[in-house]
Length: 366
Image (cartoon, rainbow, N blue to C red; front, side, top):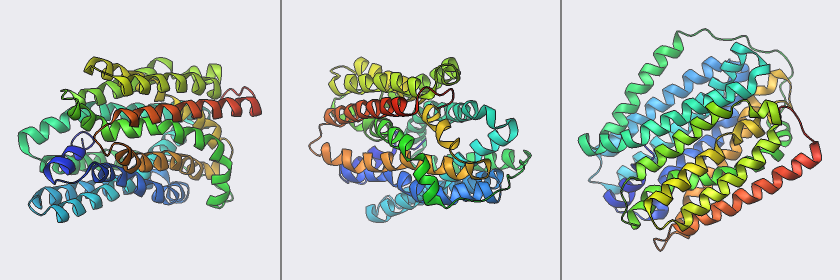
């Protein structure tokens, strides 16, 4: 709901620069970064259901803060401050919901189905992106910016009710590794994930501003196309990781992502921009599970939540940096180079993954 409307609100309504518009989006990922350890330990210690419920409550608080942001519209500094606090709350919520729901699912069906659980979690997430982006635009046009916050509050109330009624899972016993040790084990895969996630970061942050500078309509639909292609790939090729190995799947998809970002960077027509968003969605679709299964398999069951949280941190770093850095690059209103640099990073991710493949060999799950 927020992605397509936050940058224009900060840039056009509050009158702030593209850098601060990017910061308004990236603040969420900064909060997610610093709360991943808490989410992982909560999932391993108190249980993944508890972690998910805490996250949903934090997301609801984010909605309340966005309502306050809308009410303070006449005071730009206060409004922007409330927006940043709302994004911080959403970041904490995303950490807990993301880690908790995946570990909850793995606990329900067994560790042998880790790749499928991660994939289905992504299907849920990016289906929401595909539906939420244009819906957010419609809500703001019809009802005003406060409707984004109100919708968030209502959705989280529904989510809490549904989750509360679902059974929890048994927590695994065993020695809890220090987070620094867990980070060390997942870093090689996490670096590849971070480089690939920059593409999603710049699309989610700058696609609406890019369309605006080109005088094109339909930026929200570009986000929807990204999400639809992402979900479609996971539905159609979710079993590819088990068949071909995570490394080979990731290598192929990084190439597709890089090409899509390059098309987006050079687009001279909205149809080409839409194609670039679609290819990027296809390319980024299975990166997280392809490299992630190997990461969580590097620790025992008692530390799987911490490993997943540590691995996810690399996405947070990429998305947290993408907004402000992309805003600096696009300071003159030229957003094409932002997508071009993201394409170069996707190529670097491909090379890193190939090096991991050479080092570790073909693995069925990573």
